[in-house]
Image 1 (cartoon, rainbow, N blue to C red):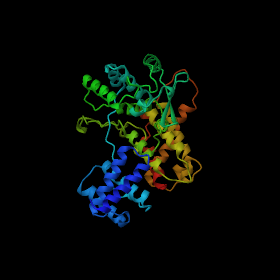
Image 2 (image 1 turned 90 degrees about the vertical axis):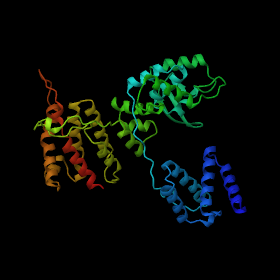
Image 3 (image 1 turned 180 degrees about the vertical axis):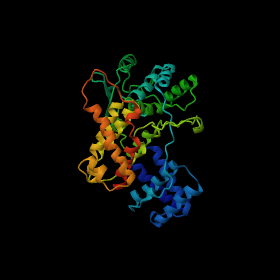
Image 4 (image 1 turned 45 degrees about the vertical axis):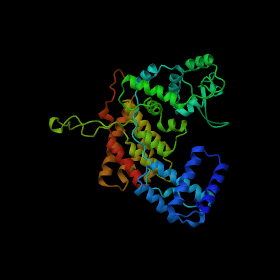
Length: 420
């Protein structure tokens, strides 16, 4: 080993030792920096340029064909080397071309989850898995629970992310409370809720193996893991009427990427089982039926808009609630909520009310036609249910009567277009 290379390794190890990185992170950083310097045969921090870094990252991407997560590790290591130690302020992390894409995940049903819990033989692992689903925690958070984190009196679990810092509170489920209380009373753990006989925390693999064995025993073909139950916590709450953004915010996952991932999760593709030649289309019902009243990608486009003049928070919330009403066949609510949308947005078009939007806004002919349909038909339908008092007999609206999906999407797409 050359003297320069040896000195550089000592310098890197010395600085890594001063920082509170995880041991694996220190090893990874040292390994990538060593691989980078060996690639060029240069061992002085100031002998390199940003072009050298770019060439190395391109090599990893195109020649080595490494995974996105591995390339990210390399970029983070070089960021530490040049920007933290070398004070270069280079945008190294932007050089990696591959982005990490989350693979589609299966969301287990409640029946599958309850069957898995019943099949897990270990009481300790069963309770740990139950907490993942009931609290929306990841497995590491469950294993890190301490006795003092459980507030049985107020039905609250304190989730600690960093030492001496309570990150958030979670609701202790009524069905889990007596089981958890009895477990702690019988086991008498010294510090951690889930301990081994030597008072150390149980390992993640112990719980994962117990769940995996239960899934195999039940013969489930889908890839159900402990992490799947966290996905299920989010999607099941959404099906119960909770707003997705609120759920993610409670979990500390309010980043836009998290919202996109979970909004698309569990949207299963349906296999086409008919041919149009065998069926006749009802002329009064030619609109395409979808699972959601407002398309997820349209909501995402509105979330991504950066408009200083108008706050779109209320509009986006209305759209979420329309989808909740649609998924639960709450047709009265749909009519009222969609009308609320058209009453809410006219200022975006520099109009005082929606009638002005329908008649005066300088949009295309097809846009104007859709807006007039919303103004006349939607408003009449909504008003008939909003302002009609109780009568001797009533008829509840059917799905077709409140189906303004296509026209409301035309309205929303125009909002996106003029605010880009």
